[in-house]
Image 1 (tube, rainbow, N blue to C red):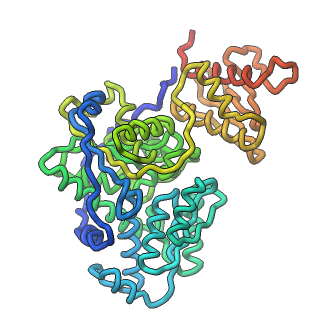
Image 2 (image 1 turned 90 degrees about the vertical axis):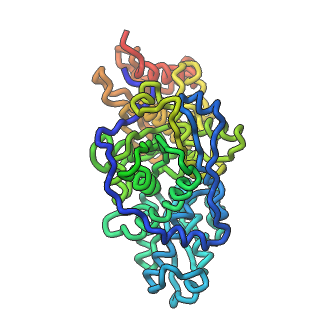
Length: 482
């Protein structure tokens, strides 16, 4: 029987890595920036902690950092400055005016982004009066693109996902002798990502100062490409601390979870997620050695992130899906998993809430296992008519439902916009075709004659009937054999 949700990965290799302490340079640099002040560390109401079986929960609120709604400016600002300082031989204690005076020739800043990082790089370009070109993955939310353009940047939409946008930004920077400011490290490109990680350490320093003598038992952080998590691990898993680190990713973009379970860095194909800042298929090369030491790796569905946004809004906290993910992850842990983590009614947990509220499409619930409810959701995902966009949206929902339960599947797309999905690795040994060229085609567990259900014209094969059979088949995949 498959689990009703992907299990948390408890890392038997977790340890306290030997790390080089970050210098104070980035912290002092941030203090010179306009509008710098520490972001709040908010203690959630006791009832929230009690409902989750812990003593205290603190939330680091990054919804307003240096005038932007995300922590990303911490890394982007220091990484951009260090890159410019390296190019033009500028001392690290230089102020903004001296930097501007020292830039002796035009240079363009480049970056790829799912949203917040690109906007932060664009903000730094404006500060230093430099042109900025931001590459974004195909299908990015239009409002997010507009926010980046509003910072004065040129936005180039990629023909592929985030990983492909990074490649395009790299090529563009190399072709114009520009500067690529990317938080994702790869072979031959590690200095700037490392500086970005150093920039994130300012947040860790603030947390220490805000907590004072309070000892933290668990820190929960989002992952993405892993640069932020790298900063968290290097700080909180320092040899002189006893804090555990738990990571969280979207079900459909869990590159760290997959890499940890495989035992080596593993690139995955992602499905678009409302947690856009974590829609990444590959862990940064410089992050992986440290991220191998995290204590627990978890994933959550878009729907869980969304409902947690609503929960936090009722507490007066306006956060986005990436920012809500750590609380969603804590809520997803079973009693047994909390016990394995050593959590108790006296434990102190810190949630790293990385972004403020933003626009996104309300996701469908991929956690449901009720056949009738699932039928309604599948009909909603299918849309009112057979169209390529409807086929893709339905396929993405089915994939998200399978990912939430860690069920293996194959996604093929011989014709663009008409995907096929087949579940593989089921104990029965059969491959179950759920979609064929965008059409519902169920080889149901309840159909021993192995006949596929296709779009007939006799009236008995209505959309509701097809989606009900789809729902029945999906739920059967996680049900015990009779």
